[in-house]
Length: 578
Image (cartoon, rainbow, N blue to C red; front, top):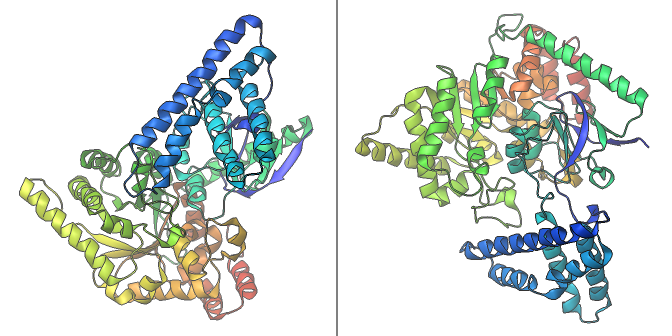
C-alpha cells in the first residue's frame, strides 16, 4: 500500500530509490528462523557485540572529561557491570538456542521480558533502572555485525535514500562523502544547522517528516520530492511514472539556469552585486566553481572539527585545509569564520555540553575566548594560510565591541608568535565580525570602528530578536524574516555599515531566498553569501531587477507594521521576478 507523508522540503529536486535506515533500534527487530548449523555462528555474533559494547564503555570511562557530571563515571561502571549479568550476556544466547532465531530477535524478546519484570516491581527506584538496562541492550543490538551503520559501505547504490529519526550536523559531514541520493528525517526545523547544511548539499531532502521512521522499512521504494516536501512510500506504477517525468523536468530547469552561469550579477540599471558562496570544506569547491561565485563569503571552519570526531585538528591540519581552499579559489575572496562550535554543533571531544539553554551558552566566540589555546591555534593556521590567497578572517557571535577587542588581541598575539618563529603571513589580513546578536546590531558603531567588514547572520539574529529557539519545532511558526522588527534591524545594520564605508553582506538563509532578493537590494545590500546551489537562481532575479522600479514598494514595506500587509507587498514586489 502506498503512503504519503508531508514534511519540510529542502530543495534539491526529486529522487527515487530504496530506503537505508540510519538508526536501527530494537523496535526494528524481526524474527528469522535459523538452521541448526547456523546457531553457533549467531551466538558468536552476539558475544562479539557484547564484547564490542564493553570496549566502548571502558573507553568512555577512561576518557571522561574533567567537567563531566560526577554521575557519568558511576553510570558507565554500572553499564560495564550489567554486561556481565546473565540476564544480558547469557539469556539471549539461550533464546537463540531454544528458539533457533537471530540475535536481534533474541535481544528483543529478552528486552520485553525484562521490561515486564521491572514494571511489576513496587520499588520506585528499581523501576527507574529499567531504562538503564534497556539502553545497554540497545547498544548491543546496534553493535551486532550488520547493524552498525557504515558510511563508507560501497554497496550503497547511488539511488539509496537515507532515513533517520534525526540527523546531526556531524552526520551530514559523513553524508556529503557518501553515495546517497537524498535523505529524510522525522525531526527538523526550518533554520536548524542540520537544515542549513542539508540545503547546501543540493540534493533532494526532507525534514520534519513525522512518523516516517516508524513506517519505512529497509529497502522500501521511496519517492522523495525535496521541492514540495512530499514523501511517497511504495508508490504504485502510475505515481512512479509521474514522478519520473517531474524528475526530468527539474533537471531541465537546472540546465536553463546554467546558461547564465558566466554572466555578471548586474541589475537592469547597472548595479553590480557580489554573489559569494557559503561552504563547509574543500568538497564544496567544485560547486562554487560551477556557480561562478565571486568568492567564499563564509567558510564554516567548525566542520573541520566535526568531521574529526576523535581528535582536535592540529594547526598544520587546519593550515593545509585552508591553503587548499585559498589555492582553489585563486585570487578570489575566502572568508574563514573561526569555529562556531557549541549549541547543536559539538564534536565528541568538547566537554562544554549539557547547558540548559545552549543557544545562549558557551558557543561561538565565547567558547573560543574560554578555550584560548584552541582559538590561538586556529588563528595561527588562518594567518599562515593568508600567504596563499585572498584570505580574510571573521569572528562569530560577537555581542559587543569589548568582546571583539578580546578576539582581536588574540590575533595580535598570534602574529607576534608567528613572526618570532619565522612564519610568513599577511600582516594586513582583513578581519570581520558576524552581526547576529541584537546587542551587536544596536551597538554597531563601536564594532564598525574595529573591523574591515561585517556579515549579517540572519538565522541567529532572527532567533534572538524574536525569542524563539530555531531548533524547537513547537515554535517554528514564529520564525519570520519579514517580521517588522527584523526588517528594521537589518535596515539599521546595512545603512550604518554603508555610511561608515564598511562592506556588509548577509550570509544567512535570507541571502539565498529568491523571494527576498529584491527587498534586500532595495534596502541597500550589495553583497550576498549563500549555498552555491542558490547562486544561479538569485543571479537570475538580480538580472531581472531594475532598482528604480522597486524603490517605492520597498519603501512601503519598510514603513509597514502589519506582517500580513508586508507579505502582500513582497508578493507585489516580486511580480514578474523570473
